[in-house]
Length: 260
Image (cartoon, rainbow, N blue to C red; front, top):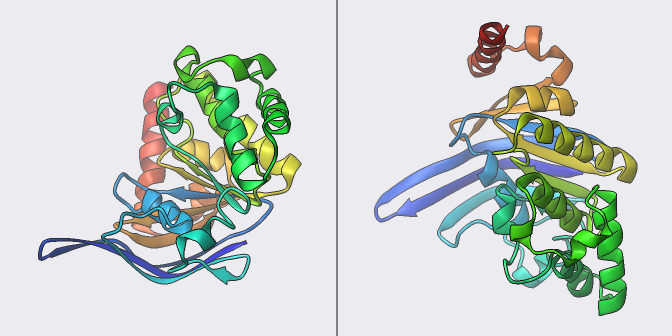
Protein backbone atom coordinates (compact mmCIF):
# COMPACT_ATOMS: atom_id res chain seq x y z
CA UNK A 1 0.00 0.00 0.00
CA UNK A 2 1.03 3.58 -0.65
CA UNK A 3 -0.14 6.15 1.90
CA UNK A 4 0.16 9.85 1.05
CA UNK A 5 -0.19 12.27 3.94
CA UNK A 6 -0.40 16.05 3.55
CA UNK A 7 1.68 16.11 0.36
CA UNK A 8 2.51 19.56 -0.98
CA UNK A 9 4.78 20.31 -3.94
CA UNK A 10 5.82 23.74 -5.13
CA UNK A 11 8.21 25.12 -7.73
CA UNK A 12 10.14 28.36 -7.40
CA UNK A 13 10.94 30.39 -10.49
CA UNK A 14 12.80 33.54 -9.54
CA UNK A 15 10.72 35.26 -6.87
CA UNK A 16 7.53 33.46 -7.88
CA UNK A 17 6.42 30.17 -6.34
CA UNK A 18 3.89 27.92 -8.06
CA UNK A 19 1.95 25.41 -5.96
CA UNK A 20 1.48 22.12 -7.83
CA UNK A 21 0.01 20.09 -4.95
CA UNK A 22 -1.51 21.35 -1.69
CA UNK A 23 -1.98 19.06 1.29
CA UNK A 24 -3.02 15.95 -0.62
CA UNK A 25 -3.79 12.89 1.51
CA UNK A 26 -4.97 9.61 -0.01
CA UNK A 27 -4.42 5.85 0.05
CA UNK A 28 -3.46 3.68 -2.92
CA UNK A 29 -4.35 0.15 -1.77
CA UNK A 30 -2.78 -3.07 -2.96
CA UNK A 31 -4.86 -5.41 -5.09
CA UNK A 32 -6.96 -2.79 -6.85
CA UNK A 33 -6.84 0.07 -9.34
CA UNK A 34 -7.27 3.63 -8.06
CA UNK A 35 -7.94 6.41 -10.55
CA UNK A 36 -6.31 9.84 -10.29
CA UNK A 37 -8.58 12.03 -12.40
CA UNK A 38 -8.51 15.70 -13.23
CA UNK A 39 -7.91 18.27 -15.94
CA UNK A 40 -4.44 19.09 -17.26
CA UNK A 41 -2.50 20.95 -14.58
CA UNK A 42 -4.50 19.46 -11.71
CA UNK A 43 -1.41 17.80 -10.21
CA UNK A 44 -1.88 14.17 -11.27
CA UNK A 45 1.53 13.61 -12.85
CA UNK A 46 3.28 15.65 -10.13
CA UNK A 47 1.81 13.23 -7.59
CA UNK A 48 3.17 10.22 -9.46
CA UNK A 49 6.60 11.77 -9.92
CA UNK A 50 6.71 12.62 -6.21
CA UNK A 51 6.09 8.98 -5.31
CA UNK A 52 8.98 7.91 -7.52
CA UNK A 53 11.27 10.75 -6.43
CA UNK A 54 11.55 12.02 -10.00
CA UNK A 55 10.57 15.64 -9.46
CA UNK A 56 13.01 18.29 -10.76
CA UNK A 57 15.64 19.62 -8.32
CA UNK A 58 13.84 22.95 -7.86
CA UNK A 59 10.71 21.22 -6.49
CA UNK A 60 9.99 21.72 -2.80
CA UNK A 61 8.21 18.76 -1.20
CA UNK A 62 6.46 18.59 2.17
CA UNK A 63 4.41 15.80 3.72
CA UNK A 64 4.87 12.06 3.77
CA UNK A 65 4.74 9.30 1.15
CA UNK A 66 4.74 5.88 2.79
CA UNK A 67 5.58 2.92 0.55
CA UNK A 68 4.99 -0.24 2.58
CA UNK A 69 5.28 1.92 5.70
CA UNK A 70 8.58 3.55 4.72
CA UNK A 71 8.61 7.33 4.12
CA UNK A 72 10.34 8.00 0.79
CA UNK A 73 10.23 11.81 0.95
CA UNK A 74 13.79 13.05 1.30
CA UNK A 75 15.19 9.56 0.77
CA UNK A 76 18.68 9.41 -0.76
CA UNK A 77 18.89 8.38 -4.39
CA UNK A 78 20.69 5.12 -3.67
CA UNK A 79 17.95 4.22 -1.18
CA UNK A 80 15.23 4.94 -3.73
CA UNK A 81 16.79 2.36 -6.03
CA UNK A 82 15.70 -0.26 -3.50
CA UNK A 83 12.04 0.31 -4.25
CA UNK A 84 11.95 1.70 -7.81
CA UNK A 85 11.18 -1.10 -10.26
CA UNK A 86 11.07 -3.70 -7.48
CA UNK A 87 8.33 -2.14 -5.33
CA UNK A 88 6.92 0.63 -7.52
CA UNK A 89 7.24 0.84 -11.31
CA UNK A 90 6.07 3.38 -13.88
CA UNK A 91 4.18 2.91 -17.13
CA UNK A 92 4.98 6.30 -18.68
CA UNK A 93 2.96 8.61 -20.84
CA UNK A 94 4.27 8.68 -24.42
CA UNK A 95 5.83 5.23 -24.80
CA UNK A 96 8.07 6.33 -27.68
CA UNK A 97 10.07 8.43 -25.22
CA UNK A 98 10.44 5.45 -22.86
CA UNK A 99 12.80 3.63 -25.21
CA UNK A 100 16.28 4.22 -26.58
CA UNK A 101 15.82 4.25 -30.39
CA UNK A 102 19.13 2.46 -31.10
CA UNK A 103 18.61 -0.51 -28.76
CA UNK A 104 16.33 -3.48 -29.34
CA UNK A 105 13.12 -3.81 -27.37
CA UNK A 106 14.32 -7.06 -25.80
CA UNK A 107 17.56 -5.56 -24.51
CA UNK A 108 15.67 -2.66 -22.92
CA UNK A 109 13.09 -4.87 -21.22
CA UNK A 110 15.97 -7.03 -19.97
CA UNK A 111 17.97 -4.11 -18.54
CA UNK A 112 15.97 -3.66 -15.28
CA UNK A 113 16.32 -7.39 -14.67
CA UNK A 114 20.09 -7.13 -14.95
CA UNK A 115 20.43 -3.90 -12.97
CA UNK A 116 17.83 -4.43 -10.24
CA UNK A 117 17.56 -8.21 -10.05
CA UNK A 118 21.16 -9.07 -10.78
CA UNK A 119 20.33 -11.56 -13.54
CA UNK A 120 22.92 -12.54 -16.13
CA UNK A 121 22.48 -11.40 -19.72
CA UNK A 122 21.13 -14.69 -21.05
CA UNK A 123 18.61 -15.21 -18.24
CA UNK A 124 17.49 -11.57 -18.41
CA UNK A 125 16.90 -11.83 -22.15
CA UNK A 126 14.97 -15.09 -21.69
CA UNK A 127 12.78 -13.42 -19.08
CA UNK A 128 12.28 -10.38 -21.34
CA UNK A 129 10.92 -12.63 -24.09
CA UNK A 130 8.50 -14.19 -21.62
CA UNK A 131 7.29 -10.74 -20.58
CA UNK A 132 6.77 -9.66 -24.18
CA UNK A 133 4.71 -12.83 -24.65
CA UNK A 134 2.70 -11.99 -21.53
CA UNK A 135 1.67 -8.58 -22.86
CA UNK A 136 0.66 -10.00 -26.23
CA UNK A 137 3.60 -8.90 -28.38
CA UNK A 138 5.24 -12.29 -28.82
CA UNK A 139 8.83 -13.18 -28.08
CA UNK A 140 10.06 -12.17 -31.55
CA UNK A 141 9.32 -8.53 -30.68
CA UNK A 142 12.51 -8.67 -28.59
CA UNK A 143 14.55 -8.35 -31.78
CA UNK A 144 12.72 -5.27 -33.04
CA UNK A 145 13.49 -1.60 -32.46
CA UNK A 146 11.09 1.00 -31.07
CA UNK A 147 10.42 2.67 -34.44
CA UNK A 148 9.31 -0.69 -35.85
CA UNK A 149 6.40 -0.91 -33.38
CA UNK A 150 3.06 0.88 -33.48
CA UNK A 151 1.99 3.12 -30.62
CA UNK A 152 -0.09 0.37 -29.06
CA UNK A 153 2.75 -2.14 -29.40
CA UNK A 154 5.19 0.27 -27.76
CA UNK A 155 2.74 0.75 -24.89
CA UNK A 156 2.63 -3.03 -24.44
CA UNK A 157 6.42 -3.12 -24.42
CA UNK A 158 6.50 -0.32 -21.83
CA UNK A 159 4.18 -2.38 -19.64
CA UNK A 160 6.43 -5.43 -20.06
CA UNK A 161 9.37 -3.33 -18.87
CA UNK A 162 7.40 -2.02 -15.89
CA UNK A 163 6.45 -5.59 -14.91
CA UNK A 164 9.98 -6.93 -15.30
CA UNK A 165 10.96 -6.80 -11.62
CA UNK A 166 7.58 -8.00 -10.29
CA UNK A 167 6.63 -4.70 -8.60
CA UNK A 168 3.98 -4.58 -5.91
CA UNK A 169 2.56 -1.39 -7.40
CA UNK A 170 2.22 0.16 -10.87
CA UNK A 171 1.88 3.86 -11.60
CA UNK A 172 0.30 4.25 -15.05
CA UNK A 173 0.53 7.83 -16.34
CA UNK A 174 -2.02 8.36 -19.16
CA UNK A 175 -1.24 4.90 -20.62
CA UNK A 176 -3.80 5.15 -23.45
CA UNK A 177 -3.10 8.71 -24.66
CA UNK A 178 -2.94 9.11 -28.47
CA UNK A 179 -4.13 5.54 -29.10
CA UNK A 180 -7.26 4.76 -31.11
CA UNK A 181 -10.35 3.49 -29.32
CA UNK A 182 -9.83 -0.21 -30.03
CA UNK A 183 -6.20 -0.13 -28.91
CA UNK A 184 -7.18 1.83 -25.81
CA UNK A 185 -9.59 -0.96 -24.87
CA UNK A 186 -6.90 -3.60 -25.42
CA UNK A 187 -4.39 -1.74 -23.21
CA UNK A 188 -7.04 -1.22 -20.53
CA UNK A 189 -7.84 -4.94 -20.50
CA UNK A 190 -4.14 -5.75 -20.33
CA UNK A 191 -3.64 -3.47 -17.32
CA UNK A 192 -6.65 -4.92 -15.55
CA UNK A 193 -5.46 -8.47 -16.15
CA UNK A 194 -1.95 -7.68 -14.92
CA UNK A 195 -3.30 -6.27 -11.65
CA UNK A 196 -5.62 -9.23 -11.15
CA UNK A 197 -3.15 -11.99 -12.00
CA UNK A 198 -0.18 -10.45 -10.18
CA UNK A 199 -2.27 -9.27 -7.20
CA UNK A 200 -0.64 -5.84 -7.23
CA UNK A 201 -1.99 -2.32 -6.88
CA UNK A 202 -2.16 0.35 -9.56
CA UNK A 203 -2.72 4.08 -9.73
CA UNK A 204 -4.18 5.12 -13.08
CA UNK A 205 -3.51 8.76 -14.00
CA UNK A 206 -5.99 9.96 -16.60
CA UNK A 207 -8.31 12.74 -17.70
CA UNK A 208 -10.45 10.07 -19.40
CA UNK A 209 -13.42 9.57 -17.07
CA UNK A 210 -14.93 6.62 -19.00
CA UNK A 211 -11.60 4.80 -18.83
CA UNK A 212 -11.29 5.47 -15.10
CA UNK A 213 -14.87 4.44 -14.32
CA UNK A 214 -14.43 1.21 -16.30
CA UNK A 215 -11.10 0.20 -14.77
CA UNK A 216 -11.00 1.60 -11.24
CA UNK A 217 -12.70 0.68 -7.99
CA UNK A 218 -12.06 4.12 -6.49
CA UNK A 219 -11.58 7.48 -8.18
CA UNK A 220 -9.69 10.42 -6.64
CA UNK A 221 -10.49 13.77 -8.27
CA UNK A 222 -7.83 16.48 -8.25
CA UNK A 223 -8.43 20.12 -9.05
CA UNK A 224 -5.85 22.89 -8.84
CA UNK A 225 -3.42 20.72 -6.91
CA UNK A 226 -5.97 19.67 -4.28
CA UNK A 227 -7.79 16.40 -3.74
CA UNK A 228 -11.42 17.48 -3.88
CA UNK A 229 -13.24 14.15 -3.81
CA UNK A 230 -12.70 10.41 -3.40
CA UNK A 231 -15.58 8.30 -4.67
CA UNK A 232 -16.33 4.71 -5.62
CA UNK A 233 -16.46 4.35 -9.40
CA UNK A 234 -19.91 2.74 -9.19
CA UNK A 235 -21.24 5.85 -7.44
CA UNK A 236 -19.72 8.34 -9.85
CA UNK A 237 -22.78 9.10 -11.98
CA UNK A 238 -25.17 9.87 -9.12
CA UNK A 239 -23.10 10.19 -5.97
CA UNK A 240 -20.60 12.92 -6.88
CA UNK A 241 -20.69 15.80 -4.41
CA UNK A 242 -17.92 18.22 -5.40
CA UNK A 243 -18.67 20.70 -8.23
CA UNK A 244 -15.52 19.67 -10.13
CA UNK A 245 -16.52 16.00 -10.10
CA UNK A 246 -20.05 16.90 -11.13
CA UNK A 247 -18.69 19.03 -13.97
CA UNK A 248 -16.57 16.12 -15.24
CA UNK A 249 -19.57 13.79 -15.12
CA UNK A 250 -21.79 16.36 -16.83
CA UNK A 251 -19.24 16.84 -19.62
CA UNK A 252 -19.11 13.08 -20.13
CA UNK A 253 -22.90 12.76 -20.26
CA UNK A 254 -23.11 15.68 -22.72
CA UNK A 255 -20.49 14.08 -24.96
CA UNK A 256 -22.32 10.75 -24.89
CA UNK A 257 -25.57 12.54 -25.72
CA UNK A 258 -24.00 14.28 -28.72
CA UNK A 259 -22.66 10.96 -30.00
CA UNK A 260 -26.01 9.16 -29.70
